[in-house]
Image 1 (cartoon, rainbow, N blue to C red):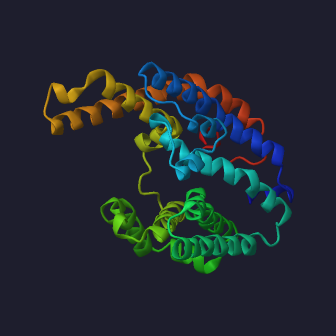
Image 2: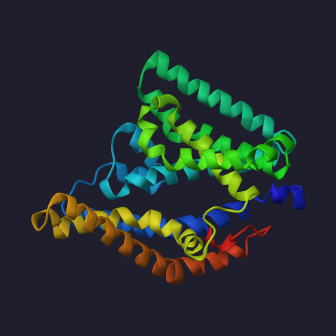
Length: 293
């Protein structure tokens, strides 16, 4: 939206170069290392590997196949598939972008509900659900209204009460999310997350400090790396053989957290940063912490 405001256009090639330079290097290095680890431990490498290679881990998830240290790549599949069409839609619907994404949200969510009620939790429902495009449209609507300074939306998201409720619902969601009907669960979490994000933009951010900012910088590495570390550690150490299960869980959690942050920090400084410097050359407008995202 800022790029349109500045240039009245969207540079699709530059957009894709920024995304490629941020996401692909670590993604494919991790993919190779994860497959190597699975092979070394003699676990199964199935056809899901091809899905992961082409950013379609969410589709393999819907089909019921996957590879253990790569399960989390489903969400990067959602992200990359979203990037395939959303920039083009914005570029060629600049004046009607809010209407377009609103209609898409309603239609996609409606199709998902129809699939659930008439076809059950079959392939069509899983495909519509795992792509998460309706949830992505919630974010798009929030971004557009924030950019346009839509009065009622800004006022609502600036409310202290709304911010407190959103944060409480977000932080406690792990306790009650399973009680929300599955066809609307992801949309509910996306809706709450939207108000958490917007309250951080329009009010003083709740988690704004040096430690959290640094973890935000390296968060992509943390996200990508941690399942492989968990996979390797639990197969090498077998902590349950040396201690009670509850103690073993704590030891694993602490060890994996520390190791993940350490490796993600090294990855960010020595591997990701060179690509991020190149990425900056393709920026049309400078965004907040542009080199980190």
